[in-house]
Length: 297
Image (cartoon, rainbow, N blue to C red; front, side, top):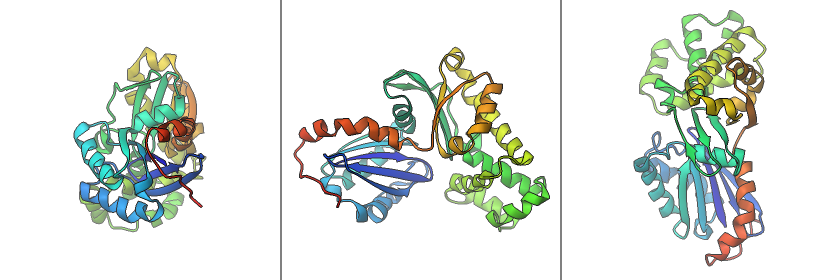
């Protein structure tokens, strides 16, 4: 069988395909090597993935993940994956490369990820080229779930959030100010913690305050991470993937129009597009390596 992987800051989606094209999907925690160390990666594979899949029968792993653009960080993840899948040919690429393949196939286009974090690129139909680094949620990542969550959290703690929303936001932040500051500046998985605050916008995008926060963040995203591509951004529609983009499409398109940009395809997750790309290739890939027939039943 082969494994296709989409890994972000907060979660990883695995899809295993046998020669018949049958699928088995598993979800684990995020495996960004900037956020999870080598021991944490191994622990996730052994505890969260091993119970659901026979790792010795996997012949190829196509892994697309955040934090995989840097060779040193990618090497840590590659080693852990090769140890866990001892009979597999493991290839790693960036989450942007996976998003581009899922959104555009072999067609050129502008591509962006807008989830817990953000990133953008131009895809020529084969390779991605980035012009603007996302910089992470402290220095950048405008428009991301982490930055939206931080915006909500800051307004809540300072009393700038409307009272009728404060009462509804309170269960997301049952901590005193000093404890929140400690979590943000010294706690683990900070981007995940802030991203969880962003879900407050779900079902509330018609409220003027929530709409204003999202518009502010999306305009900042387009201006800092898309418009610098210049004529390329104007020439090609911007295809996007990620939960933030998917659930806030109306406001996102409005912000894009204000910046003179056109949105193309918007997906919640790249996995379906990646499966559609690899499924026709399974027979040829598995014939290149000896394997036993796989049955998920």
